[in-house]
Image (cartoon, rainbow, N blue to C red; front, side, top):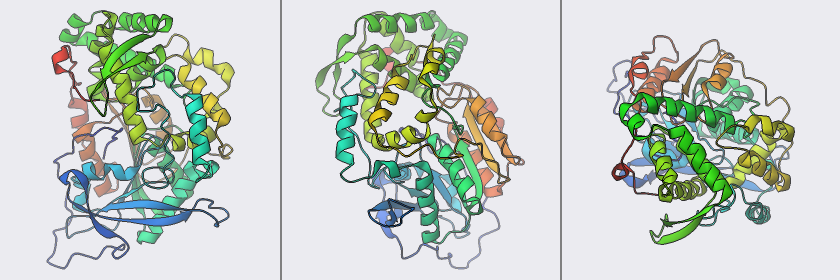
Length: 489
């Protein structure tokens, strides 16, 4: 169950050990039977069970407004059903877990275990705090337009107390749902921000956890987005290293990093108007590509192997004066983020848990000499100045320590949660194992990682895991021809 950052990752066709031979006894009745109803997954992915559970928005008072949390269970397929399910915690913050149901339908974990997906408070279909701050995705003048964020805040406050949407509250909700569904200890699998959520769940409900998988590991106390620029710069330099090592890429783009600087310097002096296809209608639309929008598009492209493999070509085209591919990437990014993330939830969580750790005086040193610059951190700080949020939770920046088995994955070229952060988190787990994926990004290791997760959860231990497929995996080949670039948003 590797990380899936708002884009589909191919499902593995791997098998996990089935344990003792299945008997002819009837399939055991799951503890949630009768609480959820059969439902059909999109994209022809099969059947599941869907339902909801209400929690108080104000968990302390346990009165007032309630939030209906959406639940999807992908039931175990085999008759030899294990009692401990896998609870998947999505990234963001702001992404709803149930949107992954179709692509998780074929996960090998289902041979013996239920996969449980819950849209946590403020995400998915659980009173989503959606904010269309970029209009239809074509607004590129600011990363976080303050006027649009203010309008969204005013609209959301009519149906939500924005101070109540925190990681701790969401994880207490999840544990309440666990009890409602009748489960004992569960296996947690978190991706990106979901790894932080998993750590909070483990610290608050240790008795409810059998094992934990952390893919693209967020470090507690991380002053995001202060370090986004430095982490993205490191990832870009590693991408340049891999491009230089591949003959075709090096021949096509021998001055890749110089071209990145040249393109962004030009846009800083003068944004350009570019005609692209609208991500929904497909009709031509003219957008104004700014330096910050271009840099943000490049940073997010570094999140996944396929998008990262296209970066040198897109930069090269822009360096030659053709900004269409770079502008299309910027528009497509905002369209996908706005569709897949409840940005109001991102603001409520990050303004309470991340931004208070940032001293504005640290920004110049943290961003100097990076292609990403300081636009993101300064604009997010400005949003937090107008966004209602909870106070910084006491003790939430402390590293979690536990004897629970933990399997951690970190991509060598991860532009937002680098291996150094994962190594610090791993120190708190004496029965943990950190796997660094060569040439890996924020999106995980695909089929190989999925097979390792299945093996780990089946064993309930990191002992004896076969890491050979991780070490042998080749880097994603670079795209050097426009004919091979994808045509979608």
